[in-house]
Length: 185
Image (cartoon, rainbow, N blue to C red; front, side, top):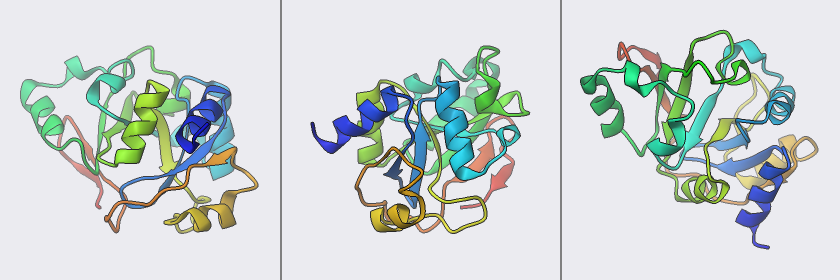
């Protein structure tokens, strides 16, 4: 079993993994597993009310979670023109999207990644991943496999070795309906 297959196996068993993204390592799990999400939140020391980001290989993987039909054609075109890439969009969530993903909001932050290893991981897993930076709240995110191992190896089920992309900062976050900048990159 190669490392990508190991990562998928851990995800399917409701585990939490770390993996390289465009700028930093991410920590992720199966978005449909409440147990896995709560484990990830405990690792991050992050309150569920804040909501989470889903990262995917393509827009199709996100459709079960977002109400894209609530966006205008222009809003949707703007979002799709930015992907794949380091742009996270806050979109209306489907009524069926669990609150362990949305937190206190009726929206969900989503991104279609340009990172080849994350694309391969999401394709092999067959759906998006919860994705948050690989660090404890308030600490600097890990940028190498060694950084993540030093900070979190005793808390994670698997670290997928990899290289972060060339970006210096985490993804920009914007509201898909208003275009408002929520986090600069």
